[in-house]
Image 1 (cartoon, helix red, strand yellow):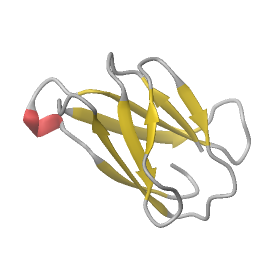
Image 2 (cartoon, rainbow, N blue to C red):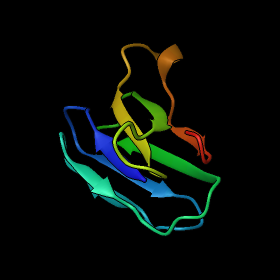
Image 3 (tube, one colour):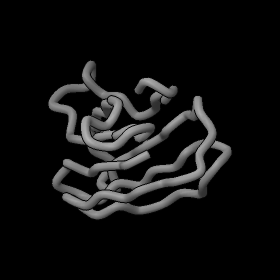
Image 4 (spheres, rainbow, N blue to C red):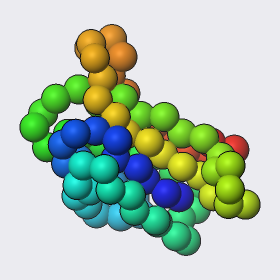
Length: 88
């Protein structure tokens, strides 16, 4: 799994039951390996702003999932937790 932080602030995320809380700076990415699927991915902005989270199969890596976190523009668009399976 690759986690991309497209937000303009740091985020804190975790893969529930598999990792502790981790911080990812704005514009950074992190690679997580050895995770069983499905997994529940949880994220929050460190400034308590709104987030949106999307997931998809990597277009360049076989058997890799990409999770992208960005800023949500309004409360109805907020997604802080997402279930990730083999196909995204």
